[in-house]
Length: 283
Ligand code: COA
Image (cartoon, rainbow, N blue to C red):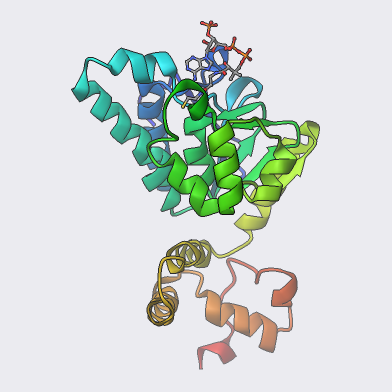
């Protein structure tokens, strides 16, 4: 990216993983309008960055995020509808539209506080790895607002209604193990294993065909809102699209590696990326 970043930090180690930090540690990474602008631009850039295969969203200084900045996002914009609208649009764009539809796999790595508005990006990404002792809270009820933007919606869509009502209505904090139990996170680990576990998941994802992974993400997300007839049709069309547009030619290459070369078993891992089709499979 050309512009210097102040409230977002990006780290890349030439291994395909981009670590994106919300970077206001002194404010527990509370999300100001300026941080939203930088996150939006950063994610847009990384989505087409050829060196980035997986994006990890996390927070600097040992916390994920204390949610929207109550001073800069809410109070400062009270008398300024134009600024408020712009901040809301930008905040929603990266935390939902962008991440939910992201072309590349995304992981949230959670430690410390994950509060209120931060549940949007928590539930928009594909996977969540959390520290067992992280502290989650839908705190909105405690200071007089709803879990707004899409927070109530994405929580209600992600967990059983009883859990959604309990945590939204009480605002009680819960830890990483509970986040896994209710379905908000995939894996809870001791804090000292958090980075390694996140990296391990990213490495596993990078062994898959990017085109097939992208289509699979989209399919799993979109079929949730379809009836069976629509899902049959959509999945057939999506399957045809992958075969037509996948640079890895995953279907033929995978079949060939299993049937002709006997070089792998799909149950236990992905076919080898970057390999050419054998002559038999082209027939
Ligand atoms: N908005 C604005 N500022 C925030 C903030 C938020 N959401 N969360 C933390 N901060 C600021 C504090 O005001 C404080 O600023 P100061 O140093 O200028 O006084 C600084 O960040 C550190 O916060 P502090 O409360 O001292 O840290 P803590 O570790 O003791 O507590 C929290 C952390 C997250 C428990 C506590 O800050 C909190 O409850 N924040 C509100 C979270 C919330 O309800 N967010 C929902 C928004 S949708």
